Every structure is written in structure tokens, then in C-alpha cells.
Amino acid sequence: MKRRGLHIIIVLAAGLLAVSCGTSKRLAKQQEGTHAALTPEQQRRYDYFFLESVRLKLKEEYDAAFDMVRHCLAIDPGAASALYEVSQYYSALKQPDKAEAALEKAVAAEPDNYWYCQGLANLYQRQNEMDKAAALWEEMVSRFPDKLDPLYSLLDTYNRQEDYTQAIYTLNRLEEKTGKSEQLSMQKFRIYLQMDDDKGALNEIESLVAEYPKDLRYQVVLGDVYMQRGKTDEAYDIYRRVLDEEPDNELAMYSLSAYYQETGQDSLYRLQLDTLLLNKKVDATTKVEVMRRLIVQDEQGARDSTRVISLFDRILDEEPDDAALPMLYAQYLISKGMKEESAPVLQKVLDIEPDNATARVTLLSDAIGREDTTAVIRLCETGIETNPDMPEFYFYLAVAYNQEERDEEVITVCRKALDRTAANSKKELVSDFYTIMADACHSLGRNEEAYLAYDSALVYYPSNISALNNYAYYLSLEHRDLDRAEEMSYKTVKAEPANATYLDTYAWILFEKGNYAEARLYIDEAMKNDGADSVDIVEHCGDIYYMSGDEEGAMEYWKKAQEMGSDSKTLKEKIQKKRYIAP
Image (cartoon, rainbow, N blue to C red; front, side, top):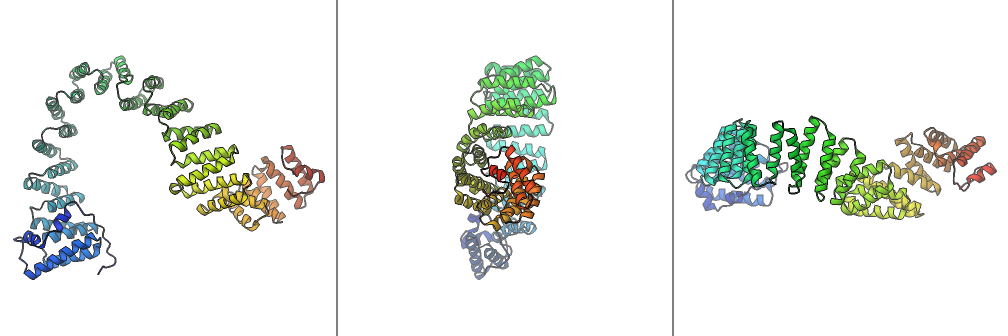
């Protein structure tokens, strides 16, 4: 019966089923001679419970499987197979001490079982018991001479312990078994450097050069080791020899430039850098890395941005088809406060790599800051084609279309965005798309469609202030659902009590409901908070003043609205007849 409260998730390791799912006969043979023999009846019961535990585990009924394994141990406490299994459950239950004790018993019972030994060594490492892990890996190296994994694991353990002498010894043993290789030699080289053993590192690279004389990479590395040891003449000879054999060898070119810099030959250093950076055969990735290092060096030293900019300009003339270099150049210009100069460089990035989102977003941000609607539209129209899953391009395109009163296109873009990106976008952004679409629908006179879109916006994000304000205001213009409009509008005033637009909307709804005294309080607040700059708010102020009994104040505000260039159809008539006229 499955017990509540015990929830275990076990990942079946490779080879585990091969160990666990043997026949009863094999299990009996594994246990033979390691502890007291079982009676035939005990053996039958053990086999049944063990195989049942495996079956339940395969069905992912881990609680019941765990119970079956413990039944096995009740029958035979020293059974290695059950001890191994129970250790896996203890590990999953975050009881490492019990897992370790069980595995140690399993290994003691069957020391020649590779999987038990490996499981215990790995557990030691997870528990940070590195001495125990190293000792067991060493035993396994002797016990299982045909397997390489114990040696690699032993190497990892010694590296974690920072026991570099033993790490080198282990690498030598691996080399004896597998032969000399770049991977092993470079590991030894790096360890020698960590040990500050320049001689050992040098010997290792020299042996690699001797083993692979045609591979010029190792010769360059050897030259670099000479440089580190202060043997600059030997390093220079190697670099020159490599370049004589392979003039476009980028590693040697860069190392030679470092040699000139280290030896104080500045003019040759700059010349060598130019040779490297302006060589069309040198990979663009290498040039990017060199320029990054050069920028860091320049920032730490002379801070000669003119030199860096000049180099970038010359390189870009030679590398027209790689986006990484102009991208790095643009980032450098921006870091220097040269945003205007970075724009054509970023455009070059997009010419090469139209789906480069970083470059496009950077240009878009600049265009938004400059209120360049044309540039925003151009960048976003292409952006939704090259990066169709980035909602910001749809959003700013919809906003830009809205500013240009291209309402049908606003609706089309919003629908595309909602179809393409809604599932992966934040609910606030989805709500904004519905709001923008609703505004466009209302501008086109499709009011019912607009109200449905506002409803959707508020379903996704009930606190969308823009949706609440516009929805409430448009309802008030139709003198429709005024109680709901008032409720929505009040939320906006509460959220932003100094926002003149929201105050005006709330005042107008109160006006429509005939609550003129309270409407006057809110329209006065709107006027105090920059509302006097809005011709619509000024006219509303006149309307509210009139209906609250202040005819003189109403005339003053109506005339002011007229002077501000109001296009109201009723304003002129209000002034002539000196009374409020509903629109």
C-alpha cells in the first residue's frame, strides 16, 4: 500500500537496471560467500521483494518500491544489491549519511562491482569527502585496469583538492594508457603554470612540439612560455620562424605584437597590430578579441580614443560582411558618449545582420528619444519581420502608427502582436496592446469593438490606468454606463491624483451625472496640475463652472479655449448665447 507523505523522485542511472534486474539465480550467486547463506524460502522471498521493487520503480511508484527494498534488507541485511538500491532512496530523501553507510556496506560486500564503487566514490565527492573519494578512485584504478573513467574522476578529485603533484601523476598514467595528446598535454601545461613550475610547463610544451612538429600552434604557445619566463629572444625567434613559414598565422602575429609591446618597441607594436587587424585572412573573431584587449589597455593607459576609432574605421573597410566588429565599435562609441556617431555603425550592423536585435533596439531607443516617428516605424516594421517574437517592435510600431493616426494599421499590428507574442508576454503588455487597439477602434467610430477591446485589456490587467481612463471617458461621451465609468475613472484619480487628464475625466463624468459641485472640485484640481494647457480641459472647466452657477467664470474659460484654437463645434455658440450647449 502506498504511504502518504513519502515522495521520492529517483533518476535511474545508466547501468542500474542491469545491476538491479538480474534473475533470482544471478542475485543468489552475487550474494554467495559474502554473508550467511539464506534458506531456500528466504531466498525466494528476497527475490520476490527485490524484483517487485524494480517493477514498482519502473512504474514510478517510489514509495512502494522503497518499502519492498526495506523488506529485502529485513530478510538479508548484508545483501549488496538491496543496500545499493536503498542508498539511492536515501540520497533522494536528502539523508546522505544513511546513503553513504548503505553504499559502504554494498562495496564491502561486493568490492568487484564497478557500479557500487563508482556510486560510493561519487557520493563521497558530493559530500566533499575528497580524501575518501581519492582513496576509492585509486582502488578502482587498480581493481578495474581496463576502465579509464576512474582515472579521469581521480584527476578531477585531485584538481579539486589542489593536489597538483598527484594530478600530474594521474595525467601521466592516462597518457601511458591513451598515448600523448593535445588535451592531456595542455592540462599538464596549465597545472604546471598553477604550480608556478615554469620549467615543467616549458618541458611539456617542448614535448608537444616534438610530438607534433607540423602543428605551428604549439610552437607559438612555446614562444609564449618563453616570454613568460623572460626569454624574449627565444620567443622572438619562434614567432619569426612561424611567420616565415605561415605569414598569416594570427596567433603568431598577435604574440609578436605582445613581444614588441613587452620590449618597449611601441612603433613596431602598433605596426604589428595594424598588420594583424587589417589582414583580410585573419578571422573576424580574432580581430574582435584583439580590439577588446586593445580597448581595455587603452582605458588603463593613454585613453587615446582617436587611435581606437581610427583602427575601427580602417578595419570595417576591410570586413564588410561581419557584424561583430561594427557592433563592438558601436558599443565603444556609445561608451564614449558618441551616440550620434554610433547610429550609422549600428545601421551597418543591421545591413549585415538584419535580425541583430541588440542593434535594432539600440537604434529604436534613440529614435524614440528623438521622437522620430518615421525612424521608429522603419525600424519596427522590419523588426517584426526579422524578430517576429519580440513584442517591443509591435508595441512601438502601434504607438507610432497611432501618433500618425493610421488607425487601421494600428489595429492590424496589435492583432498580429496578440496572435504571435501574447502567450509569452507579460499580462501588462498584452493589456496595453488591447488598449491601443481599442483607442484606434474608437477613433474609427467602431465603438462596440473598442469597448470589447477595453474589456479584454482589463481582464488581463485590471489596473491598466490608460484603459480605465479612456474607457470611462468614452462611455461618458455617450452618457452610457455612467456608474461604471465613474468607478473606473476614480481608480485612475486614486492611482495618479496629480494627473490633469484623469482628473478632467472624473470631473466630466460627475458633470454628466449632474454632480456639478463635486465636478468643480476635480476640474479645479485638473487646472492646477497643468490642465490650463489643454484646450479640452479649459472648455470643460467652462462647462462645469456654468452648470455650477458661475456664469462669469464659465465665459472666461470658454473665451480662453477659443483663444487657444479650440475646434469645438459648440464653443462659439456657447460664447454667443452665454450658456452651456451640450455637444
